[in-house]
Length: 321
Image (cartoon, rainbow, N blue to C red; front, top):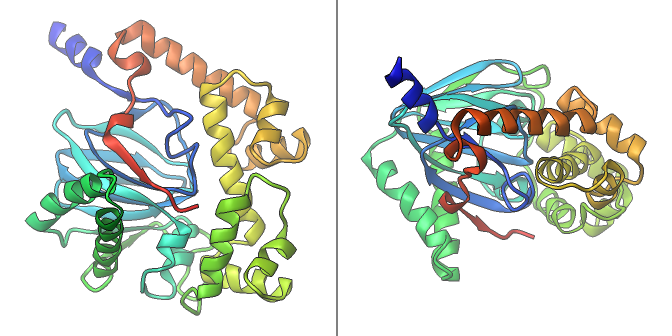
């Protein structure tokens, strides 16, 4: 009994902060750390690359469960609420959160982006000892302050993800929108330009007309091109970036719901509440209450390790906006 209680005390819990992936949804983040379990599902507007170096982890995704063991790597869209609810004591994982502007630079099979946005997870066991060395090096270079090294780390990572689709891989739990015909063409430079503009301006009052103009396209064509390339609409992507930012504010700040709505780019509380309910299944006020209640219970059970421990020291970010 004493041993069991000791293990619970040592169990770290992921505590997002305003400067983590939720609060900076347009930046590329590298990580190399012991993964902490999550108190509740979270979301972010990046594609997530996870490589398990040792141990095992378990995810609860929006439509399926996923267990990753040592030597496995997966790719999934962070915009789907997901939660790591198990992490072995010896687990170590590495990877990155890729904003869409980076994701679209890769030469992937045309249907992959739509399948990911629809809730599918891509899984491979085709990894080797080079991955054990490369992932921590990429994180180190990205965090070195050397622009050449940082750029090189990003380029190598993107090539590694491309290689995933040149070798055997598995598609797990295709979502409703994730089917092979959902995207018929690889993303174009125009989609990258739209993503760049959105990353720089999603907290402002922008719409499809503004985004299309930034890419030199007619609004209707821009909307169709973006949906064909990503499996989602322009406005849905903008809304997800705003919701990711709002999630971080609700978890860590004391601003009113109105202030959170305005600061995260929504024009009204009603629009914010409606969008938030769609992804979280509850209004933002209930989300904040539940997060704080869970965190308080965690502190009582295992203070001080569980209470405010985060993985910030294990993450690095490369600006893309």
